[in-house]
Image (tube, rainbow, N blue to C red):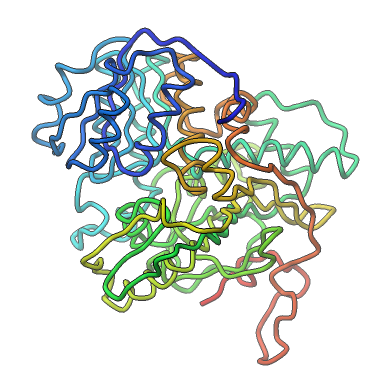
Length: 472
């Protein structure tokens, strides 16, 4: 059990959409920290997965797959003013649910922005329109015509979500450790100027999952420590990254967006087929998948500095993900099947025998080279802290809980991204569930021991160019 004493009272109902590994993991945390009777929680989901657990806790359970045609008729009798719509689904449009929640006067939270089923895989859509950048632009467009209103927190899981709060804590730590005297920023412009002043060129969301199961992956099976469908969907989207002002070389297969701020670019290849170099304290240097995530875009956007309408500073930001070894094998097999998902899926939970999910942010280019700050949560500690969770899922469910409580405490903030939230309160809520929160400096850079076996065209004067980070 966590010693987290956070507790809030909530007078409305909570309606879950989706009840996979994250929904099952967050339900007991909500009942532990939110004052609500279990019978005031309704789970609307596409199948029977998790019914036994939901009913054991006393939550109501409704098996009805939501579609564009039926979601209003299913949810309208269940959701009213002052209630909370908690969207933990795949294949249900986040934008449709945000709009619906606002119409009903309900609070809202999701952990990623999802399209309707098939949206990630529609060959009729351009690569640009299958990107997270496009989905984020559509979601933020819902702000038009509204000021304030019921809080809708977009993309608040571990990442995207919690990592945006870790970035702010890391910036303050770097400032203190490099002798930069600064008052804690209170708005977006001040945070961006701090990142610029510190010389931050790169923000990696660097994650290495070493959890191992007693039952190894079998041929024709996709194994993961969190949603298989979610990972396959985002891994099949184009690789995306926020594009920094220090970059000299545009990728040959890169594309720019024709709307919005232009803070990010995409590559004409799946994220799960593109690897980048990164670093975490326990793993050291490794190759991670350049998986698209909303935080890769929102971080670059949030930390942009403009002068008379011209962008003068922006960091490069992206996710660099090494999942558990069985998931790496699963991705290799998936790519060989031309991105057609395997017939069998397995989310690792009780069969995990050891391992740690090391998830944090690597900020580089400053006076001390690079600094990683994040969670090193073991499977053993995750099981001690909360039921129905692995180390991976608990990082997500604790962050979703933190976002839910923040929305309850700030009910009229309108549509909000994690970067726009006050970072200390969410970290206070989810911190006790994250295991050791560790900060480490490193002299490592992506050019370390490069070019020894084969000659390479490198920017030796600036190792943090994306040209040097990327592995083709």
